Length: 201
Length: 434
Image 1: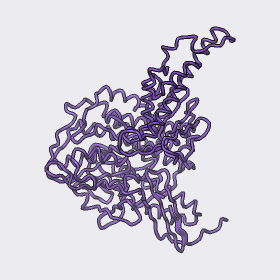
Image 2: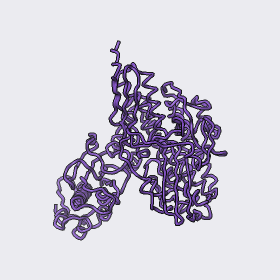
Image 3: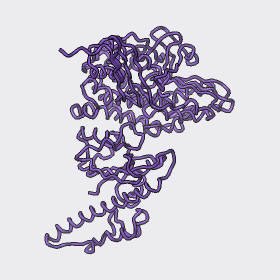
Image 4: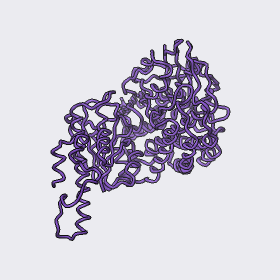
């Protein structure tokens, strides 16, 4: 199953809109993603019934703007120093820890934190954060694509016997959700070469 | 036997936890006597009253809502009440009922958050709601369900749960369809069972003794447990209309705080909020809420601030009963708002925010431009009284070491669910023992 991507943030507060922008770009490519509030109720309701979950949020840790922090939240607590850059009453880390205490975490939870520069009252991302949004979108799209490829290979492999090695050239991938074909590269913020490289794995 | 604490010491809490906003506490003890208690609201000043000047009268509900993410409806509806008072408008009963409904949602969500995540850990010995959740998962899940129910009401009537967008002077931009509200009823019925269970759970907590001599101040209403409208009454016999508020209450600057201190003009402190509302309005509670109060042993009034967790739970039951009654009777009004034509006048408005009385006053130009604004939030009104509560617990427990005393002081503050963000124009504890 493809991981569900949940984006947190506010488009009206500059770089805090990073999470929602990643969600919009992934949805445009047919990859399951939606916006969610960072409060415990919204998060627990947001990932109810989902398998693996990836949260994308704006963060402020003192790193260079546009730095992407990749954190596995399933096994360990999120670092307390990674303060969510939003104005939510309960920070993302506290909401995740409350869900953990209640046994309401999804099977796997990762957090992509995008280091912000400016969260003033304005629309639009700063250049460094816009680049990071492109990077995160491309990475999550590629991961979604690889998972669907692995699953399809697994299903086909069972059908054809254990010893036959399949590649993506052995079947038609045109109907797959999330397929980052070359014509989708712009909407994904992917370099065309990167988008083409994937199906040739 | 533990060593005697020094006769002179300062106990400081640099950052108060489980309160809304940023504040500190400093207690100075000298020669075994409490010299000074300062609740320091250091959250930066916000200057709302100043930047409302020059804005239009119809912008006030949306701008003042931003003062607080926990009680935006309180700000919206106090602003509406003041503007409508200035313009000589009274909204018809169906619009008043919808206002009451969205306000019930805010009471439920705000109280459920405080009861479950902020206040209960004090009684069960946990540093945070998250730690408490590992051992008391069912109680926390129940609290979250109540927060969801409150948020669902606010979203259905207000468009969204935080900073609702549907409130305007004169009423609402759009009245919700009956079906949308009726769909809520099942969730609210389940929430009502959760609220009754939460009231029993809080009543069984180990609640310290400690009645105080409060002057209670709250709105009262002839038919309802006052929420969105009423006359101000006090346990000392005040009975006021909104325009009379400033004759009897005054705000003062204090050097240690970015929040103003309110007091009775020519007098002392007073207390707003759940204990005051319950003392003055218990007879207006719904039958189920009254029964929950009786089963919890509250009596006709409750002057023990530690028991405010029980009163808040009873108020959640009341708000759910009220919300269900409003929904059962609801028919969309023909017009979702009445016209509010500006005129040069001063208007006064107040409502019962979850933490207590919230007063607004605006002076408008003939074209509706705001000339002058005054906003008195509940935490400003309670700040002096909270300091006195802290002083009382320090005096009664002077033999405790600094850590023990600091914990009790923080509890004395959290009893009143202060909203520092609202009051700033707020908490970290320092005890100075000399």
